[in-house]
Length: 299
Figure: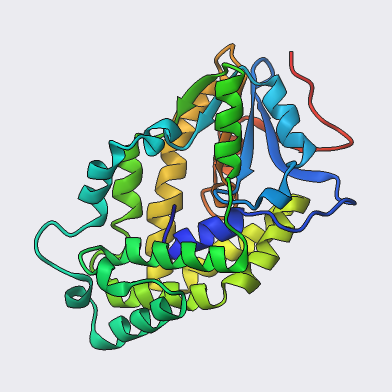
């Protein structure tokens, strides 16, 4: 569901390589001494072969009375979403992909689209953010990496088990951020994202192994790499830092509630500067990574 960083967000959130010997997971227990909740870093796309998930995810799910997602997944599945989606991904003022990009950027985009068998002409009215997302999805399909995400898995499971649901942002807020990051920097943004797309498999292999083994440090290094360019800094601020700060305000109230929540967000939100976990520690909460040996018990 992402773009420049989106490509990175999805890649960094995926999990392909299982490390049986690792005791850590990408799930954390958060407590103020009286109340508690769980936070899990997720993949928004995961091949069926990678299920079942690490045991700590299901353990947190069983403890939780309420599931909290980034956005309302049910709205994203509703056919009526199409008109709303178009208002964010399609230019409304007559601009086209070709008119906002210089000839070099457009030619490179067109050539990569052809390699992935994506019809670039049909995407002419759409913003670069959406177009690159389509190329990324095509690449994931080509690599055999596409599939049901961790978020979808727990949403479906929660519906079946009649769990209470909550969301950290409205769908409108979510779409507004995802499809505006390239505004004013279209050529630089496309160049950065196409570079990432071309190295997608290598980046994924590094990140996926880290996800399975609960290696948060690798994600932190990748987050820090975004600060090497102006575009990366803009993406980090819009897609991660600002959203994290907004979410922590809500999570602060959730920790203090009698309910036990299991909050599921993209793994990159739990690493790097101003990540959700560090912001909670700054507020005085005890944050502990779950592992197979020592796991906090719920009340």
